[in-house]
Length: 260
Image (cartoon, rainbow, N blue to C red; front, side):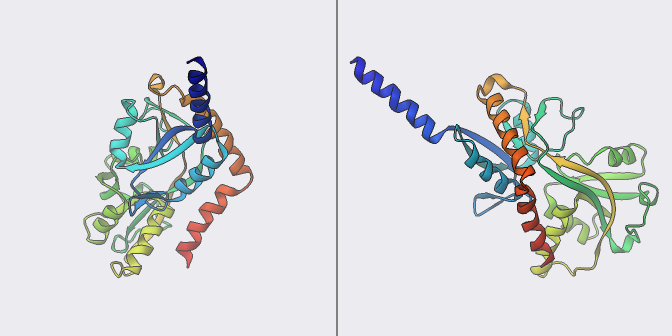
């Protein structure tokens, strides 16, 4: 009997060691090319990075899932999920969240309808007074946008995802839209390829800030006993991948797809 129990324990240990502790990373389902879903499979720059990370941490098996961003924030806040990607670091707005090392640099940029007359030479917020600006639901557009809203220079309006906001922009339901530059350019190219966008009516105006995307971490650590160990190993791999240029290679492949 003792030998049977011992064999069972050894086999269980080997099984855990071979497959690793399962860890699920949840991502935004509508933030192409960074994080999105295609044919029920999580895709995007972050998904590609995390699959590389998975190969480097044998103690863990990383699973990727996507969900609406605002729902993900709520679940992380309540400790229903351990990880959510890719939030910007907002310590005051999201006190329930800790963060991994910075993973990717993003550029918050305002794109506007051509008819507004706004350009890259425009001054924010002075030249944007009275504008209705779209942002993604649950998205934190940063201090400059929030200050302009609080001073009544602009009005903010939220919709779910980049595509929904760009359609509002094209159909004259918004004056401008703020989001990461690469995300907007990526979706505009897809819309143009599908014949839904003329390639001219939306113009890139001012860059507001550079931000870094992270892996967001719940502070409800008791629900996930492996959390601290996983995060330490995750950060170590991210640091090395950045140093070796692997993350830049992944990002550049998506940027090149826009240029083609």
